[in-house]
Length: 138
Image 1 (spheres, one colour):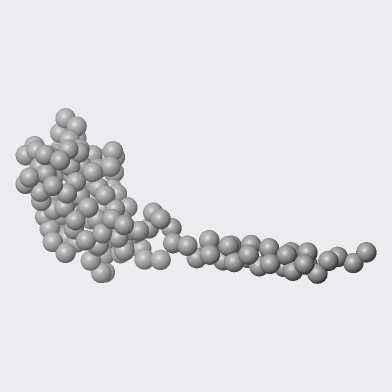
Image 2 (cartoon, rainbow, N blue to C red):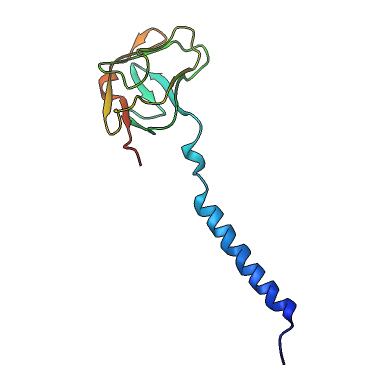
């Protein structure tokens, strides 16, 4: 018994659709690689944290970076010895989020430690252990 021509066409069409879907999914940009990257600063008995950690934060080389306090009224300032962004220090005297843009060209693969950090005018005693590491370009 010969298969009907429409079933052969249906199978080929289904296979083509599956291949097209696979191709589209493999080309799709990772959602975590778009939009700004946020760094939330918190003060915990003079031991400050960024994104809940007391370590250096990895930064994507092609994404804008937004520093923010844990609360909208949390004043903060972050100082660097060498600035990885277009302007430093990162300062928000009124607690608003600060978009410092993407890292400067030529900073990829480099770690930038903080030389000082204050939150609500209180100094962080562990500022030197915090900072950002600009991931290498892919």
